[in-house]
Length: 141
Image 1 (cartoon, rainbow, N blue to C red):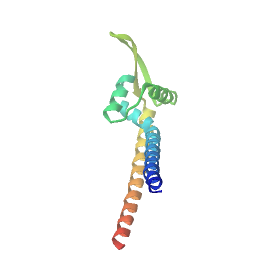
Image 2: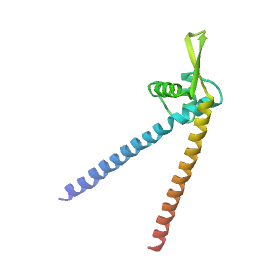
Image 3: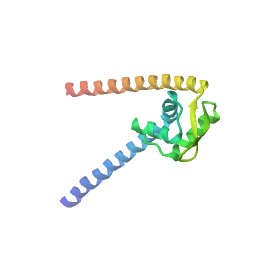
Image 4: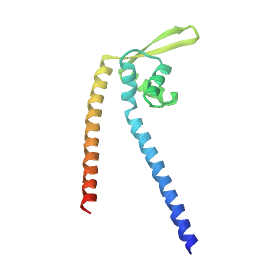
């Protein structure tokens, strides 16, 4: 009986922790996907860039994005007139497509940044309030 209880405690706890970690990873991935358009625009906002350069800028900010994710975003932003591009010949291969932000893209990025700041502020306030309430409950016990 002791073995069954110990097995259940250790095994089910591990599975519960694994589920929680996997769920958290999935939720974090969804949060990152939700801000990728803003991050791509921000990466291009200071100077034009080609896809590999954009990926490198994102990587330097600890946002690991693969080409298969980046190209649809670039296409969508271009189709929405937030980005433009130009072709440039390359000495080391095929021509490169350099992306730059448009005036509409700059306005869009500004709105996204304002929305992001508002969201971060609201989430931080909520988390701080809940943390403080939990801390107060612990002191009262």
